[in-house]
Image 1 (cartoon, rainbow, N blue to C red):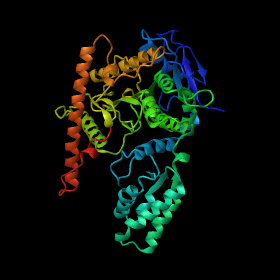
Image 2: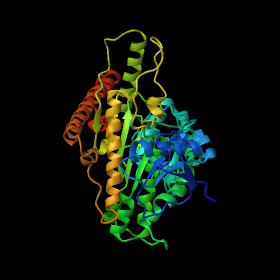
Image 3: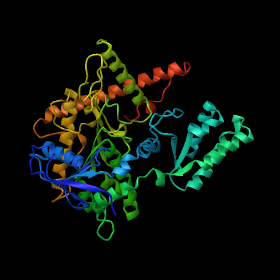
Image 4: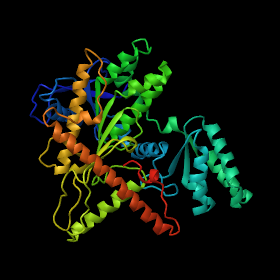
Length: 473
């Protein structure tokens, strides 16, 4: 029996109320134009998901379109397993090679440091993860590592052992030490699909996306039909929901392959899925779908990869908070709102979406900075309002494009067009151009910061590869 449930909201009832009429459903028609909200891990109650759908009804659909408006309800038991959930999200950064600090343990509330291993990165794991760990901590350093095998566990474990034996020749390990490492690899290589692919993702996928790429008999659809059906669904995601959306995108690619779609067809179809993610806890710039994110540097609750961008933002945020609370108003962090495109994740970012809370000397980051999913609010900072405007316009543009698909498939427009509202287009376009400039300046700043940090650690080294520095937010 499925545990996945969705709230279907009544957009026409009590639009000015906080909680409006809704009812539970466990299926969504595959040819239906709709919007689906994948909320954060707190969306385990009908009332919470109904409230999220209510935000969509009042702040997006009102005066736009009366289309089916769904919100996901998570299973309480799954969301209460915090250690597993944290590990599953963390391993996604490992899977997509976003944690560029190879020998540093992370602060993710984990009891171990999992390393993602596939048939294609075994040598990399040995050279960049296992060997440095042992050089730094001695042979007992291997005990800090566990290996997550994406594929045949026995084969991958065997190849890891062979790889370590090959690269460890010059390390001078005794036979006993070598056996310690080999035995640890044997006993601590686990299945990715069993432990790090949540089963509830399959349930959500079967409801949301499978009917859009296959017929009632489980066969592939004509290209134009699959494109049109996928274009009709618009996904809003917050926090945990962005991780779910990324996992759904991965499932979509694998399922289309098994159905017999060609690589070119898969690319054409998957590019029509629009995901607008608020405060996403997942790797960015890796989805094959149109995945557009909105983030705040002052959001201290969002999990990000171990890279220079994360370090730069965390250091500056903590420094500025300290300055504010000690009365230092001179050294202000001048982070302008910006946009990072392409492989950097299609991310709109701002320093703060909301102001700090508390009294002078005890200012802190408020609840709203991470948890607020509104698109219209009088509590936004100027930058917060700008990001909310772009996010709202993108969702509305996606919905309007979905409705056109009822008569004739029309591809999803580029981001530069999705941000427009038909009234203030010149201003919005100019602002988007400026955000892109600011994004490029941020990358330059972080590059300089990273070079400086490396020079402090390794005075003889003055070179940091740009691709390492400009990793995703």
